[in-house]
Length: 160
Image 1 (cartoon, rainbow, N blue to C red):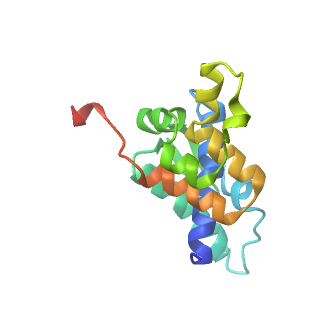
Image 2: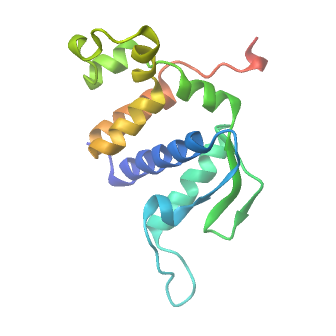
């Protein structure tokens, strides 16, 4: 079992990526409260550790080249955020057979009779993330996000 802050990190990044993918290619504001839940700053105006961890996860996504944004709105949100090309491609591509087997999300009977394009769509990383969030299992969300972040590598034009 992972540390709780790591499970929260995976959930926060999953929610943020789904929000950005749903808005793509439009820029949108990513509010920490929409991802991590409401937060009341303390008497000194400081946010909770949970709020700051979520804000840190959003900044990490940018540092790792998965999103861009114009500015921060205090420690409340990222202003005009959008997925990078490499994040969009990664989320849109089918997950590895190994990840699909590990998650046991698609059994052979689930896709019988479906067109190939639909079968491919059901195996994309974004579809897996959405299903994991709907399922609500921290373990499943963690496994899916590990697959997104760590299986294979992002391919960029600089790699060629």
